[in-house]
Image 1: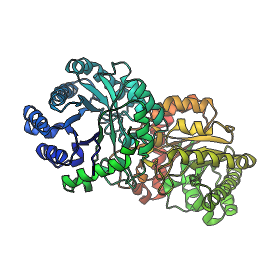
Image 2: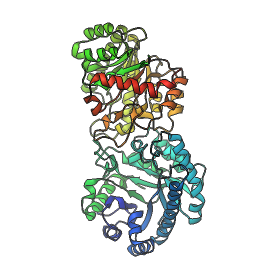
Image 3: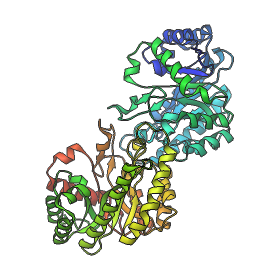
Image 4: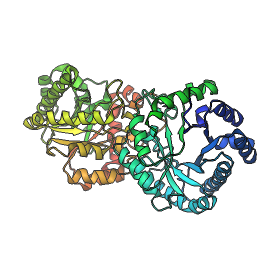
Length: 287
Length: 287
């Protein structure tokens, strides 16, 4: 099987593989690109991680993840913003180390309601405040911050940004090269406005990354792990992928799956199965 | 404790109570209104149920529920539409039997994607087709069909209508006395457009019912049962209730809770606890 040249394996899909393993199984499978997570990168240290990435010959598609900045002002918020600056630095270093065509994109998950709070509007405004504070730093580093709207079932405890339209509204005050949005099928497939918002994201130059995986019910007990291989669920990858392609988006497409059964499988098998699913569901709709 | 005169107990909150018990515990608690479900009504038969309701002295706020009409044309779709006509008849009969101030509102849950289908847009268009077919029948019966947007986590398997804005778009072709929307805090609290869509629903005369209960995480294994007493979760009932009140909505407000722990409790206790929670979270924001 030929692996689609635009497929990128998000490291969370093979969560239990360390960085060396993740890079090796991805490259060995003939996949050309990878999205990394901060924890395994920091486990080996950024310089070593960057060298390992360079040696792998893989492109770097995104760094996961920053964000979690809905807390009110105080030491915890300061610590979170400092941590986001480190994540920006990591993103820049890894993008520079990756093969030609790498992109310096840091995915941001906004964070949930602070403990005991019901002030969703306030939490959202603090997301905007955090972007205002981080944008100059990201711009200096040449990094794009990708606001990721998460499915509304995560709206209270994980991410107060729930739709692509809302992510674009938040991004509107910033240069598109500095603040964009992550378009992840799992999170937005249900949205009655999804096609108009994808088109808008394209017009506004804000599709920082396109990520795919499937939605299926019943949801598992931990709904965070309810992501599936493309084709195993109900998402219409044909229509969504064509909508993204029509905006001119021509970069890597990541597969990011959180799923306990898939994590329990051998990473080589997961990467192979991911490449097959991608070829069957996404590739036919690429130019 | 004085029970708020606008509180209505949706029968699903005391799911295991039969109709006689539901009516009795609701009236005995000093609650003035009840929303009924089709199954317990049909268990005793419509005529008997109507008489029991009249004898209870309670107002009737909604009938739950119709809908489930996303299937393509065929015998199953016909059976579903016929069943909706029966539900309309039931709604009219019960509203006539309830105390003064009863409302003839049938709540509609649209239904999910047909088995094996990924065509969300097609399913949604069949909801519109069903409304077109049912609206004259409902109008003749003096019944308002209330499209209920369900939380997007139910978007594939239960209800392809996921936002209040989408429900209003679907309703737009029909007279507001015939097709409206259910405004249920649990389903729409997360929506970045919730306040503008509540205001729009009011302007368009389409708030057919206002229902309250709370959202809390972690979600239980069966996410259908993740509804809570108001005040136990993160929903801002002050802002949402004021938004509904500002539209001029002045009818009953239902509490509808699906929760295994609450269902396991004695119905008298549940009604008392519901009345307390309502008084604490909703009543202060009513005129």
